Image 1 (cartoon, rainbow, N blue to C red):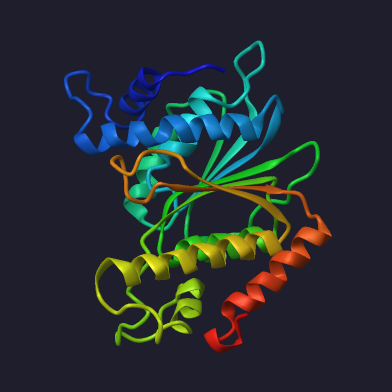
Image 2: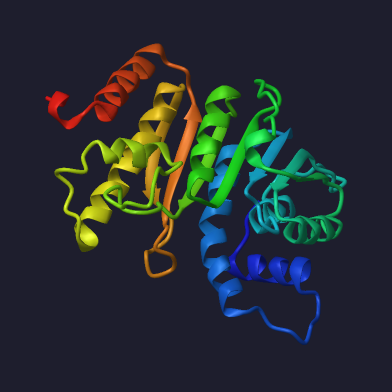
Length: 267
């Protein structure tokens, strides 16, 4: 199914604004710039499969999941859709907005779960019923929880866009829940403690830790810039496909062990 930025704009307006006299806000227009390439990623992941489950985690109002339901997921000759949408959002207000918007997407089974991704069990993927997990701007440690959930119950595809990295590991603010930050803290004596250099190096370690954890869990990973940094500074997409190749998993597990070792042990 082909779609354009104008299609996404109209869909967002219909689902979340509705008033013909009201225009999209600046942040909504920015959202369109992010949704267009991500919806293309969802379309590639879904392919021509007529049934499956699309899970939108840390969904907010589920602009990504519901636009996918309206614009991307395959439909039969009668307009019906064999895909189920599961939306997980812990904020009650946003979950309510997603539930209201879901009622405006016809002939799609949508389940809005008001809860935390840490306690929500993913559905099991099969050859005939794939599972595609999406998470746009999963903040801080929420991205790591999503990685853990996908390793425990692997979907067919994970499309993850993290957001926020937390403090520099040299900070005295106490322990940080992001596993990659704990790995970065092993390098605290060699990380510059000032400005951008230290933060960027720590962020790179967080990104490497997440990538290796997914690869060790059986995924093939591409990390790409899905939009320009002028649209959002959090513009990296983890495109993870479940392949479960033992040699790949073993290499990633060995690299992960080296990453989390102390700097003196790295060779």
